[in-house]
Length: 264
Image 1: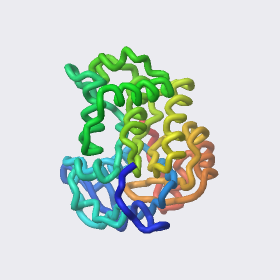
Image 2: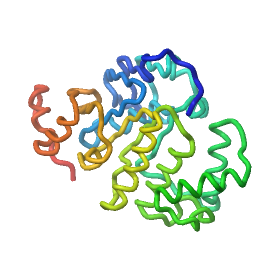
Image 3: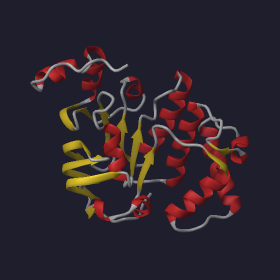
């Protein structure tokens, strides 16, 4: 875990009236969100509603520009930190579409990531012991250590590797962008188990998802619904079940608009 000090009971993340976008387009339009230590927040919504933009902005993706607002992480102005500083401060982002890096082995990548985030090296013996235990929990064969990062990996293998990084890097706040996408039932259970273990160690989570199915395994404290770049409804786990049965059109109507066309 990050060793930053914060007041007991203080929020780990506070987002205040956040406006942001990319390529000249405003996507986030006044997001307000508070995450307390140890909480799991699920963010649901249609494609294009701004969910992934929020995680990218929080992690400091250079393609996104903050236009207005404030983000406090453990009492610090997050927007003053670059990507590396955010990672070292305890933020972690699991990508919706992890990229392949031919020529870089999984072993080399993971050890470099641990060294970069924690600011110290670990012995080869200690690293191998730690990683073998993590591989076993996530049903990842040891042979993957010598494979190139995500090169030729299935969707489930990529997502398992993302959760493995979550375990090794021990962040304070994990941003999980559609970690359940493309997973079959067995892979979903394995990946969810890895997320739950991180939560049990005290990691706070923002989990972006379209569907309620992962929330059957990773129980959120709070569920938020994104619509047109802002949070329009907040509730408990029952809200996710309502969305599963009713969809999103009723929220469009409540917001004074018309139902959006179905995504292709």
